[in-house]
Length: 328
Image (cartoon, rainbow, N blue to C red):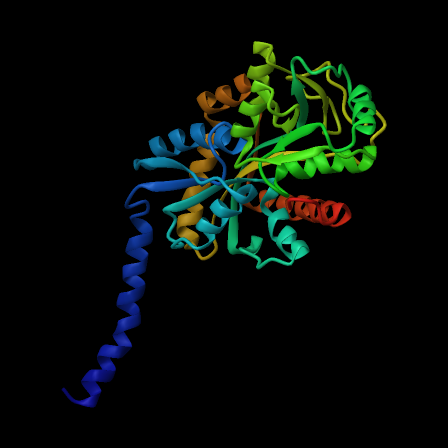
């Protein structure tokens, strides 16, 4: 073969490559879609993922499986998706700790496992303030009693979290820092295991999402003392906000949203966004969230990206104010 034939063949190669890539995108999804939740079952991420996965499976015509990968406050699952092939077959349903964890690594002098810009926001699903809950037999009837007891017994009252610098840890650190108290932080792999130990009495307090706590409050195993939002939440209308109690700087929201690895083709993202739009408009999906006491809070990709940027800046500032904490 002479040089002219070789060059002609090479010149045509990008066209075939682009055509192949276009076919692959048009065929998406061509296999099972894996939705990673970086926490064990039973928490806010899992609550968001399961009805969404079921709906996406119907819309996309392919299995959508929830893959719980708990650990390190969510960093293990987040990192797994960052490193996944960016073909749209691996997605991430994660929480507001997404931006906090890289900052915590820097704060603690550890290697940063991932950066937020290695993920692309697809849609926000839920956005709730965390709620402070205690064991039903705990002696505190309100936040003032808890604070007074903590000041009398510094470092002795155990509370749980989803892991160091995770959503549940940062919200509690906001509270304890502002209240001038010290509690005993017990980290877990996620909110689900922490809630199990709250119910059993192994820990005495936990900040978590309303939808996670509501069934336990109704069952009489835990009670709530305050919520971290700017306003009272419909599922706990009698529970005051920390702002109402005089803690103006204690405000925290535990949102859940869907992300994809950076580099996913734009055509795939467009189809995924449309599938999420249909999912979040589905009355059956909305009913699941409403029943759980965690109403849907849908935002499409552009608005969600702006929301993530603003919320992340606020949380990173809070983490820097909290500083290094024991067990972080």
